[in-house]
Image (cartoon, rainbow, N blue to C red; front, side, top):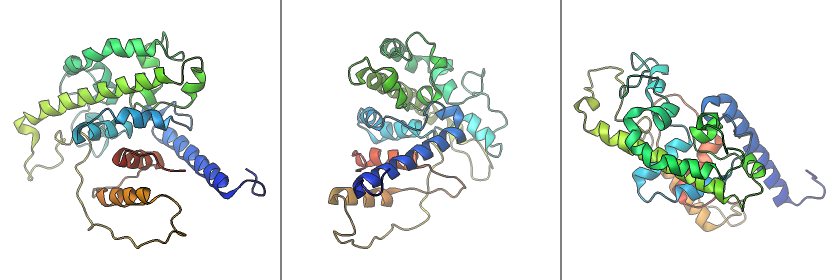
Length: 275
């Protein structure tokens, strides 16, 4: 970065990319089980394209939760203050119920998984870095969070404009959401889903996509900015305000990464964050 020769827009771009790179590295370090393999850069347009395949809010919500690693699993409930007695899956009774188990191994969801298996195999065969590898040897950022790392593009530079990787990510996300929808609809039929308030620390099956939010503060108000203070488009400003007003909060400790917030905004507004 040359502070003497580069213009301000170019400097801002480099700073922003550097911050994003650092945040992604920290995300991978903090949550390697789900995000190992990102290596500091993701293919954001590919993720945005995959989200456009969902026309309902329910499907879009499930897709977002996959991407940000917020699918509620029994392993997570067990790890957090022992909300359940065991992390073993209640549906197959065979393994710990984490994202990998739900998406790839749980026999209870074979019906939702089966239509996509051949499509996944065909799409992966066209991606040079994944061709011939068992699915469980793929980077976890792909198999568990459906996040395509930027290095895949370089590894697959012989293919036409990354269409093969884009196709694979779209198929995977459709598969994952289909499984989550089947799982959710199955749970809705269960009478034990809704615990009595007198019962403490039951595993909240009805919170499949993460803890149910509750608004703790009234909608925010924002002061008007002059054109000299706001250098982006009016549409971006309105989208940003709408997104901020729709944010939901839970009464519990936690943290959100730059990637999670950026992806949530882009999914909400259906537009990329401007440079």
